[in-house]
Length: 229
Image 1 (cartoon, rainbow, N blue to C red):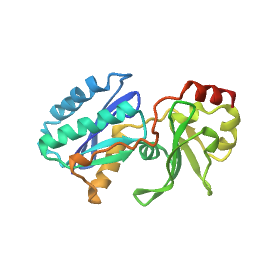
Image 2 (tube, rainbow, N blue to C red):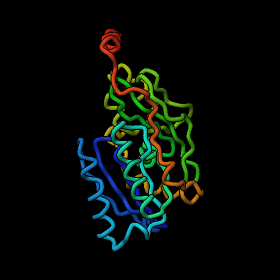
Image 3 (cartoon, one colour):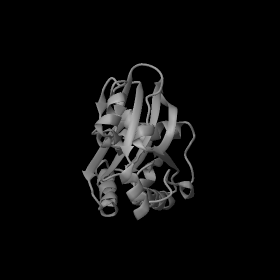
Image 4 (cartoon, rainbow, N blue to C red):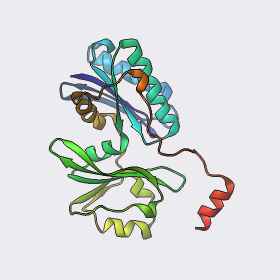
Protein backbone atom coordinates (compact mmCIF):
# COMPACT_ATOMS: atom_id res chain seq x y z
CA UNK A 1 0.00 0.00 0.00
CA UNK A 2 1.30 3.44 -0.96
CA UNK A 3 -0.31 6.49 0.65
CA UNK A 4 0.20 10.23 0.91
CA UNK A 5 -0.65 11.71 4.30
CA UNK A 6 -0.76 15.42 5.15
CA UNK A 7 -1.49 17.53 8.20
CA UNK A 8 -1.99 21.29 8.63
CA UNK A 9 -4.08 21.23 11.83
CA UNK A 10 -1.65 23.25 13.98
CA UNK A 11 1.20 25.70 13.45
CA UNK A 12 3.17 22.76 12.05
CA UNK A 13 2.87 21.69 8.42
CA UNK A 14 3.77 18.10 7.57
CA UNK A 15 3.46 15.50 4.83
CA UNK A 16 4.44 11.84 4.69
CA UNK A 17 4.49 8.88 2.33
CA UNK A 18 3.56 5.42 3.58
CA UNK A 19 5.34 2.98 1.27
CA UNK A 20 4.41 -0.56 2.29
CA UNK A 21 5.31 0.18 5.90
CA UNK A 22 8.22 2.54 5.26
CA UNK A 23 7.64 6.21 6.09
CA UNK A 24 9.21 9.17 4.32
CA UNK A 25 8.25 12.51 5.84
CA UNK A 26 8.81 16.26 5.87
CA UNK A 27 7.79 18.72 8.56
CA UNK A 28 8.14 22.47 9.03
CA UNK A 29 7.00 25.10 11.52
CA UNK A 30 4.67 27.02 9.24
CA UNK A 31 2.96 29.68 11.32
CA UNK A 32 0.39 30.92 8.80
CA UNK A 33 2.19 29.61 5.68
CA UNK A 34 0.55 26.21 5.34
CA UNK A 35 -1.09 26.96 2.01
CA UNK A 36 2.24 27.97 0.45
CA UNK A 37 4.25 25.12 1.99
CA UNK A 38 2.12 22.01 1.72
CA UNK A 39 2.05 21.51 -2.08
CA UNK A 40 5.82 21.99 -2.59
CA UNK A 41 6.36 19.65 0.37
CA UNK A 42 4.19 16.99 -1.26
CA UNK A 43 5.83 17.48 -4.67
CA UNK A 44 9.27 17.10 -3.08
CA UNK A 45 8.29 13.88 -1.33
CA UNK A 46 6.84 12.33 -4.46
CA UNK A 47 9.76 13.37 -6.67
CA UNK A 48 12.29 12.27 -4.08
CA UNK A 49 10.79 8.80 -4.06
CA UNK A 50 10.23 8.50 -7.81
CA UNK A 51 6.44 8.47 -7.57
CA UNK A 52 3.54 10.12 -9.31
CA UNK A 53 0.36 10.92 -7.41
CA UNK A 54 -1.68 8.55 -9.58
CA UNK A 55 0.55 5.66 -8.50
CA UNK A 56 -0.64 5.94 -4.90
CA UNK A 57 -3.52 4.01 -3.35
CA UNK A 58 -5.02 6.86 -1.36
CA UNK A 59 -4.58 10.09 0.59
CA UNK A 60 -4.90 10.47 4.35
CA UNK A 61 -5.28 13.83 6.09
CA UNK A 62 -5.41 15.25 9.59
CA UNK A 63 -9.15 15.74 10.01
CA UNK A 64 -8.97 17.48 13.39
CA UNK A 65 -9.69 18.74 15.85
CA UNK A 66 -7.41 21.71 15.34
CA UNK A 67 -7.16 25.12 13.73
CA UNK A 68 -10.23 26.06 11.65
CA UNK A 69 -8.11 27.42 8.83
CA UNK A 70 -5.61 24.58 8.99
CA UNK A 71 -8.30 21.91 8.79
CA UNK A 72 -9.92 23.59 5.81
CA UNK A 73 -6.56 23.73 4.03
CA UNK A 74 -5.99 20.01 4.65
CA UNK A 75 -9.43 19.10 3.31
CA UNK A 76 -9.16 21.38 0.28
CA UNK A 77 -5.72 20.11 -0.70
CA UNK A 78 -6.78 16.49 -0.14
CA UNK A 79 -9.89 16.91 -2.25
CA UNK A 80 -8.06 18.67 -5.07
CA UNK A 81 -5.31 16.06 -5.27
CA UNK A 82 -7.67 13.11 -4.86
CA UNK A 83 -10.13 14.33 -7.51
CA UNK A 84 -7.34 14.88 -9.99
CA UNK A 85 -5.76 11.46 -9.43
CA UNK A 86 -8.94 9.47 -8.80
CA UNK A 87 -7.87 8.42 -5.30
CA UNK A 88 -9.89 7.60 -2.18
CA UNK A 89 -9.33 9.58 1.03
CA UNK A 90 -9.39 8.89 4.77
CA UNK A 91 -9.41 11.33 7.67
CA UNK A 92 -7.22 10.71 10.72
CA UNK A 93 -7.89 12.12 14.20
CA UNK A 94 -5.20 14.53 15.32
CA UNK A 95 -5.71 13.40 18.92
CA UNK A 96 -5.28 9.74 17.98
CA UNK A 97 -2.04 10.69 16.20
CA UNK A 98 -0.77 12.05 19.54
CA UNK A 99 -1.52 8.67 21.12
CA UNK A 100 0.36 6.94 18.31
CA UNK A 101 3.47 8.97 19.15
CA UNK A 102 3.40 8.17 22.86
CA UNK A 103 5.30 5.32 24.45
CA UNK A 104 2.45 3.62 26.22
CA UNK A 105 -0.69 1.57 25.74
CA UNK A 106 -3.02 3.99 27.53
CA UNK A 107 -2.73 7.61 26.44
CA UNK A 108 -4.53 10.76 27.54
CA UNK A 109 -4.18 13.32 24.73
CA UNK A 110 -4.59 17.09 25.08
CA UNK A 111 -4.26 19.71 22.36
CA UNK A 112 -4.33 23.44 23.02
CA UNK A 113 -7.62 24.77 21.60
CA UNK A 114 -6.93 28.41 22.54
CA UNK A 115 -9.68 30.51 24.16
CA UNK A 116 -8.71 28.86 27.51
CA UNK A 117 -9.94 25.46 26.30
CA UNK A 118 -8.43 22.15 25.22
CA UNK A 119 -9.27 19.35 22.83
CA UNK A 120 -8.85 16.02 24.54
CA UNK A 121 -9.50 12.32 24.28
CA UNK A 122 -8.21 9.05 25.75
CA UNK A 123 -7.08 5.92 23.90
CA UNK A 124 -6.04 2.39 24.74
CA UNK A 125 -3.95 0.20 22.45
CA UNK A 126 -5.53 -3.12 21.52
CA UNK A 127 -3.33 -5.34 19.38
CA UNK A 128 -2.12 -3.01 16.58
CA UNK A 129 -5.01 -0.52 16.80
CA UNK A 130 -6.33 2.10 19.22
CA UNK A 131 -9.63 1.87 21.08
CA UNK A 132 -11.27 5.15 22.01
CA UNK A 133 -11.89 5.31 25.77
CA UNK A 134 -13.01 8.95 25.86
CA UNK A 135 -14.32 10.41 22.60
CA UNK A 136 -12.63 13.60 21.32
CA UNK A 137 -14.18 16.65 22.90
CA UNK A 138 -13.69 20.38 23.47
CA UNK A 139 -13.64 21.34 27.14
CA UNK A 140 -12.40 23.64 29.83
CA UNK A 141 -9.18 22.28 31.35
CA UNK A 142 -10.90 21.56 34.67
CA UNK A 143 -13.18 19.06 32.89
CA UNK A 144 -10.28 16.82 31.87
CA UNK A 145 -9.90 13.60 33.83
CA UNK A 146 -7.80 10.45 33.70
CA UNK A 147 -9.92 7.34 32.98
CA UNK A 148 -9.90 4.38 35.35
CA UNK A 149 -6.93 2.05 35.23
CA UNK A 150 -3.18 2.21 35.64
CA UNK A 151 -0.37 3.06 33.27
CA UNK A 152 -1.82 6.17 31.65
CA UNK A 153 0.62 8.55 29.95
CA UNK A 154 -0.04 12.07 28.68
CA UNK A 155 0.71 13.50 25.24
CA UNK A 156 0.12 16.86 23.59
CA UNK A 157 0.79 20.55 24.05
CA UNK A 158 -2.51 20.94 25.90
CA UNK A 159 -0.72 19.89 29.08
CA UNK A 160 1.58 22.91 28.77
CA UNK A 161 -1.36 25.34 29.05
CA UNK A 162 -2.74 23.85 32.28
CA UNK A 163 -2.04 25.93 35.36
CA UNK A 164 -0.45 24.24 38.36
CA UNK A 165 -3.72 23.77 40.24
CA UNK A 166 -5.30 21.88 37.34
CA UNK A 167 -2.14 20.07 36.29
CA UNK A 168 -1.27 18.60 39.70
CA UNK A 169 -4.16 16.11 40.12
CA UNK A 170 -3.85 14.95 36.51
CA UNK A 171 -0.08 14.54 36.69
CA UNK A 172 -0.47 12.50 39.86
CA UNK A 173 -2.41 9.87 37.87
CA UNK A 174 -0.02 9.73 34.89
CA UNK A 175 3.19 7.78 34.47
CA UNK A 176 4.72 10.59 32.38
CA UNK A 177 3.80 13.46 30.07
CA UNK A 178 5.16 14.59 26.71
CA UNK A 179 3.75 18.12 26.48
CA UNK A 180 5.78 18.93 23.35
CA UNK A 181 4.02 16.29 21.23
CA UNK A 182 2.05 17.66 18.26
CA UNK A 183 -0.07 16.13 15.47
CA UNK A 184 2.19 14.99 12.64
CA UNK A 185 1.71 13.35 9.24
CA UNK A 186 4.37 10.72 9.93
CA UNK A 187 2.48 9.59 13.06
CA UNK A 188 -0.78 9.62 11.08
CA UNK A 189 0.61 7.43 8.29
CA UNK A 190 0.19 4.05 10.08
CA UNK A 191 -3.29 5.12 11.23
CA UNK A 192 -4.24 6.04 7.67
CA UNK A 193 -2.90 2.70 6.41
CA UNK A 194 -5.03 0.88 8.99
CA UNK A 195 -8.10 2.91 7.96
CA UNK A 196 -7.64 2.02 4.28
CA UNK A 197 -6.99 -1.62 5.17
CA UNK A 198 -10.33 -1.65 7.02
CA UNK A 199 -12.03 -0.38 3.87
CA UNK A 200 -12.63 3.12 5.22
CA UNK A 201 -11.39 4.96 2.12
CA UNK A 202 -13.99 7.44 0.88
CA UNK A 203 -14.68 9.51 -2.20
CA UNK A 204 -12.79 12.80 -2.21
CA UNK A 205 -16.07 14.73 -1.91
CA UNK A 206 -16.51 13.26 1.58
CA UNK A 207 -13.31 14.74 3.00
CA UNK A 208 -14.48 16.84 5.95
CA UNK A 209 -12.92 18.35 9.07
CA UNK A 210 -13.65 17.50 12.70
CA UNK A 211 -14.26 20.93 14.23
CA UNK A 212 -15.80 20.27 17.70
CA UNK A 213 -16.08 24.05 18.12
CA UNK A 214 -18.72 26.16 16.37
CA UNK A 215 -17.07 29.54 16.92
CA UNK A 216 -13.55 30.89 16.56
CA UNK A 217 -13.53 33.71 19.12
CA UNK A 218 -15.18 34.74 22.37
CA UNK A 219 -17.22 37.92 22.59
CA UNK A 220 -15.94 40.73 24.81
CA UNK A 221 -18.46 39.82 27.54
CA UNK A 222 -17.49 36.13 27.32
CA UNK A 223 -13.81 36.98 27.66
CA UNK A 224 -14.52 39.16 30.72
CA UNK A 225 -16.62 36.39 32.30
CA UNK A 226 -13.92 33.80 31.59
CA UNK A 227 -11.27 36.13 33.07
CA UNK A 228 -13.29 36.67 36.25
CA UNK A 229 -13.84 32.91 36.61
